[in-house]
Image (tube, rainbow, N blue to C red):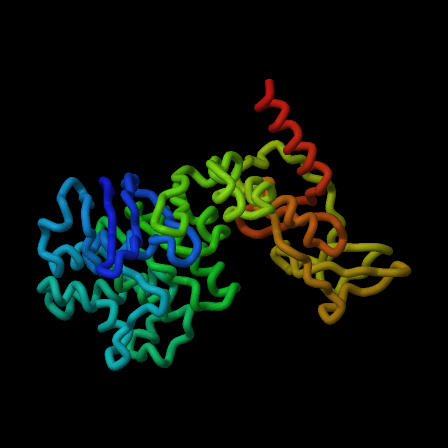
Length: 360
């Protein structure tokens, strides 16, 4: 566990970056620090591994005061991932990942074996091992940064806006990868971001900071969205917090409707038809104005987002329905095969049922 007890950081010019912070980070979960620029979230993170020392108060990691630990030794036991990955440009990828194990006295073979293993874990191909950071994309570099932070198997991982420098598509992929890794590894992760969407997607608990280093609210994401503590949290979370809140409502009872489908190259009926590949996975939609046309690959319209019936929420179901050109959200199973359609009206009815149950 990481615990902040009355922690304050005041700089010589009188600026207070963190003001009397009281907070407990749960073991084995992702805790996200979020807030506007200048709110103290990054300062709070960096005080955990003594990149910055507190002015007053106590920070405990597994019951030990960090100020009573040797700073270098403390950092070797805590993984740290930053925005630009912070890789050594003249070291190969495998040697970048092996950095901390080598500092801890591992022999080179053992350290490189561990690095190679982690490359596969974070989705990097073996041929990248001998490349240099400058030869990788931004998203690949961030994966290397995560692998390096995990190399010595630290119980605690600090992540300071690690995905903010990559494009939105890569960012979403990295977020999904982190959630998969966390499901396998169960680390205690503190993650800093300025993006409330990223915070509610990743966090088991979310700490919202206001300017001046004050903790405004610390709650599970669903609680944060449904019951913001004050006007500041309400405005920071945003006007569409009701839509975000659908992410935390189960869609298990959502009905599935029949979906008209064909394989690529088959003839279609008039209207919208979902085109599937040979394995039954959606390729997109085909719109036939008169009937009898062929579902040619060149005429397929992108199908919008997909609703996973096994792990989806009311938000993902509604998004699938709203983003579909046909108005029918495509529901898929765990293997990505189409199993039916979801309708926006059914999602709204399911939401109304939840509210009726809460009011009863």
